[in-house]
Structures are given as structure tokens and as C-alpha cells.
Image (cartoon, rainbow, N blue to C red; front, side):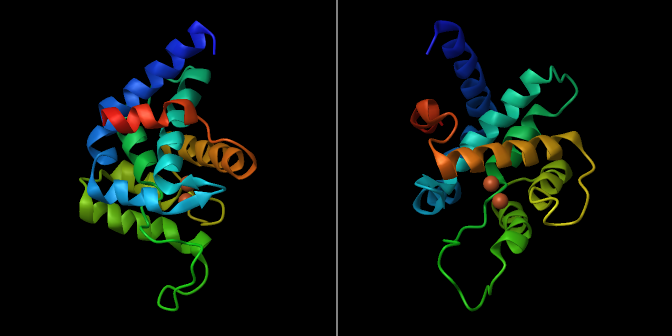
Length: 171
Ligand SMILES: [Fe+2]
Ligand SMILES: [Fe+2]
């Protein structure tokens, strides 16, 4: 990695720590490390990568008007469903793809202080699978970052794998 890229990655990692350290260091979020999201990436690593990519998108698009606090925390909590989605549970039934966004929003509201914007981001991050149209740019940034990370994790290494442990160590 070039020195310039290292500085960019560090700036993003520092922002995730600044706005989301308490979430990453919570027992609930740490419990997401035991569930696999895609490939061999845990749900916790996936959500940290998504938070990093959200910030990267704002830099690529030179976005100035967005809520950095809600963007990072909404991303960290967007898959806070707290179960192994690969294992069928008769109580939950089928349809993880459709259901998990509202389960994550409910769990997040129970364990953290969730703003209306964060709630929208979490509830609508599966758009267009969940049909309700997001109303805020932070939600669209999350939708894009989630797709990018999911593809990377399914077919290769997660984004920001080089700083995931560093972020978790500092949180
Ligand atoms: Fe999700
Ligand atoms: Fe996700």
C-alpha cells in the first residue's frame, strides 16, 4: 500500500473509531463476530467494512452535507439481527433477506440510542428487496456500500480487511 493510500485508509478508520467505538466495543456488536455474513467474513467485520466504505463513498463523491455520526453508526448496526442466518429457525421462518432489516432495527433500538435517521438506514438497507423507498442520502450511501462489501466478501477479501483488527483493537 502506498503511503498516500495508507493515510486515506487511516483517516477513514479513525472516523469509524471516533463515531462508533462504543458500538464496536459493546457486547452485542462483539457477539456479531461469531456469525458469518458472507464467505468467511463475520457479521461484525462486514458491518465495520460497510461503515468504512460509506465514508469512502462520501469522499469519492465529495459529499459535504451528510450526518457522519449517523452514517457510521447506522452502518455498524445495519445487520444487528443477532442470529446465524445460515441456520433455519422455525420460529423465524424463511425470508432472512426480507426480514432481517426490521429485526436489526428493533434490536439496535433496544441496545443503543438510535436516531430516526439511523432507524431509516437500518430498516431500508435492503432496498429494493424491501420496497419502502429510502428518503435520505445516508440510506442510499449505506445501500451502495453494503452491496459493494457483500460482493467483495462473497468473491474475495472484505474491504478494509487490513485495518479491521486495528479498528476493533482501538474501539
Ligand atoms: Fe443486511
Ligand atoms: Fe450488510
